[in-house]
Image (cartoon, rainbow, N blue to C red; front, side, top):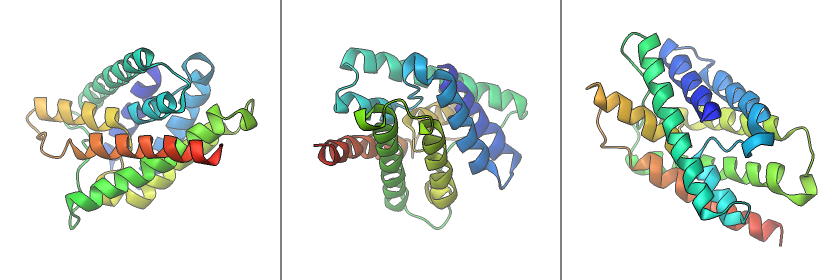
Length: 203
């Protein structure tokens, strides 16, 4: 919950400030939170990552549900705090102007796939156990995805990011749930695909 909170808070404040360096801030926030909590929980901070880790066989389904629940709670709290700090506005991912829902969906699938595959190979594989670069690799993957596809899909790559921010945005009368399916279906599909490819890579 703590790691997801600071990830989503950084997203909300960085995007809300309008800085062009928001993807760098977001990737860095994920990196430092991964190093903070990796030894405690595995530092998923993302239900799609939790799904991938579960399908990979490193966590039981009951435990995965608990992880996902606390990730969403962290995201909800962060979106609310972000809205307070920004004076009533918050980040909610949305399909970029000039792009279709299908293009946004594919972008979410592809870069969540990349993220979860990097997590599985750097943080759960026996051949890379004990490395010191896993947090850097994970954070940089999100940064790359945000720079590359943020303008297409909003660059969530994380169901908690999408759901938490969209719920708070809608509750405050600023948005709707019309596109929330993109940020659930896309990341979960990407996470499941990454687990399948990981098994092939490491068979």
